[in-house]
Each structure stands twice: as C-alpha cells, then as structure tokens.
Image 1 (tube, rainbow, N blue to C red):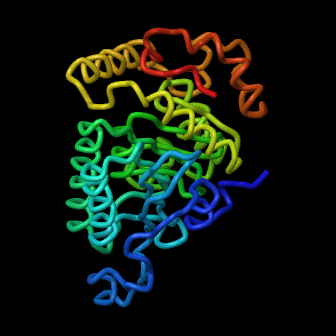
Image 2: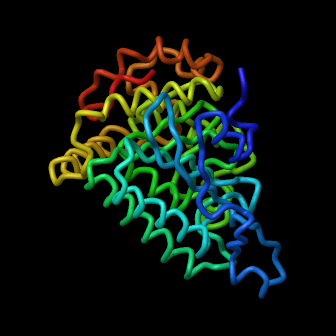
Length: 305
C-alpha cells in the first residue's frame, strides 16, 4: 500500500499513469513572470505537471498540481498550462481527462492573473465535457482542494476523494480570519475534517467515489469512472443544472438549521454519527450504503467504491 497523501505530484502521476509524456517539462523553464518581482521563489513547472499517457490501456490527458509549491495555488502560467491541456484534449479526444487536484486556490501573489486563469480553466473544462470527454478529478493531497480549484472540481463529471482529502470553497483559516474563531476554529482539526473531509463530502453527494489513501485504490477508481462514462453523455446539460439546483435547495431545507456536521449525519439516518470518524473507508462505505439511495442527494452518483 502506497500513500497518495504523502506523494508528490510526479510520484502520483507515475503511480497512476503509464507511458507518461510530459508537456512543457521543467527543462523548458516556464516560470511565473510575477513571482521574481516579489522576490518569491519560482518553480520550473510552476507547480503543475501536464501530459498524456495511459491508464489500464486507455489514453488519458492528465494534470497534477504540486501542493509542495505554494500549496498548489493557481497563477498565470499554472492556469495557462491547465487550459492548454484541456484545449489539446478537445482536439485529440483522449478517453478521459484526469485532474489530480491539490490547491489552496488562487495564488495571492498573482491575484488578478490567477482569478482570470481559474475562470478560463472552468470554461475549458466544460468544453472538454461538451466534446464528449469525461473529466475526472482526484483529491487526496494534504493541502486539499479549495477556492477556485474547489469550484473547478465541482464542474467535473466525477470527483474521487479519500477520507483524508478536503474539498470546500473557503479554507478553515480564511473563514476564521473573516468571521472569527467563534464561527470556525481552524485549529480544531476534527471539526475541519468533519466539515470539509472526504467522508462528509461523500455523504452529501459532493463527491461520487470514496477510496482509501492508496495509489492503487485511486487508480482503480479512475479506471472505473472512465468505464462508467465510456457510453454516457458527459456534457453539462440544463437538466443536470436543474437537478443540482433542486439538490442544493433540498439540502438547505433539510439541514439549514444544523450547526454541526454530525447533526447532519444524524438527520440523514446515521444512528451513531460520532463513530464514523473511527471507521476505515470500507467499513464506512458499508455502514452508509443505504443512505446512497436517498434520491435527494445521490441521484447522479454510482454508489461509491
């Protein structure tokens, strides 16, 4: 068993993808034009790896964000590499586009350029889906997936997470800074994972597949997702948007008065919600399998791994 959480972006690509050919590798030295002006260090791949390869014999285009460089935050070059990969996918028609996401959001050093880049990534991602290519997002890094990349991830066809992964719009520190520790204590790690972690996101239907923190488990889940969408419509439709809007409205109606994630789990029918954190992934999936039949929250999922 090899931990996905502890791996670098390049190690993750190596573990999941065969015959990988990198586009714009570090030797090309595509670095940020903004960071040197702020006396900030640069990375010769600007914190993201892009390229193509195969996964279980199927051709995929892949991007992997490096959480070790500025938390995987998106800047101008970082975003341009993601957009370029997605535009190339539309032309060359791989069987899937896989995004190994790990990002704190937009790089504050390049705020305006980063924000524009994220919007371009979202548009490019939807173009990939419209071209009939499924977009699969994998989240399992220690930095989680927040901010603009959190939004980008929710534009994908499938999100695969581990229990250790986190997904949200705003990070715990951001919420605490904006609204005070009474609103959200970022030092309460149990609260952070109850609120943004993989188990909670899976229960709410924000991610479709939950796997153990293992390279092989993630690879198998991606292969399953590719197979699932091999004969399925991938484009974002008005019907899908309407279903999502109803889901969010129902979620707010059912859980809007709940202050604690465990209260939400209780309302969903979990008898001993305090025990969920102690369960390994397989035991958790078995315990909560019945909840996946709730049409309010899981109409667009496959029931997990």
